[in-house]
Length: 280
Image (cartoon, rainbow, N blue to C red):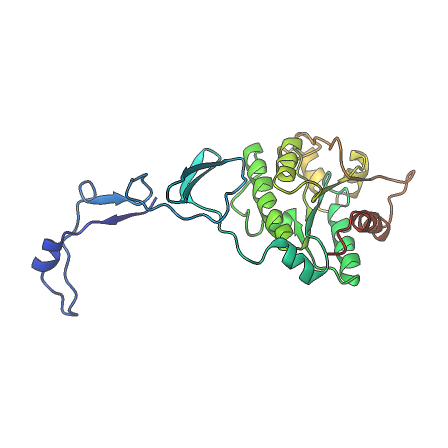
């Protein structure tokens, strides 16, 4: 919340100047002379809207006589009022035409050690070699910056995925093929990210690898720490992983052998090609 002190014209005229020539204002009372800039004052001018947002958390109040629209957005119980979605003349279709591809999200989910990051890197390399613009959002990498303030409690995991969902939505709207590689253990959170995008633009890839295989790999040594009780709430050990029910793509072992990264990537690329995402 931002607040600013209120100064009367009289205090300005009667105040003594400093040596630098600036008026020396009296210290305002924090109780009597504050104006809350976020208050729902009727004096706030509404913003003219070019297009109403379609967010499910959006409340729209319109004044048909003036053509003005006020928006109110609610996120996690907190509200932002008097905001509006501003539509630009360059739209997603224009960016896609420029890039000769369609923006979408490839959401790779699975247990730690299931091969998510390996697939993401192989996939972006394969698409790059075909002249397609991609970007990888790796779950660990995102926690180095955007989500560095989040821990691993259930509520933080939910917020972690919510933020990533908003970012991948922006990349998709930019016309980029965005590859998100995140455990994302809760089905409800993944479905919420899917709901942010147009139908078909969220491609869920489930790395369906047995827990024993993931634990045997243990590339970061986290399963060992979790089994020793040094990490609490670790997905697959003492925190649940809810597998997808209707993933667009499922990657599994072939017998006792895991497919090579290039083979897994080609499976995803073939899907994207068949659905028309590799052309404008």
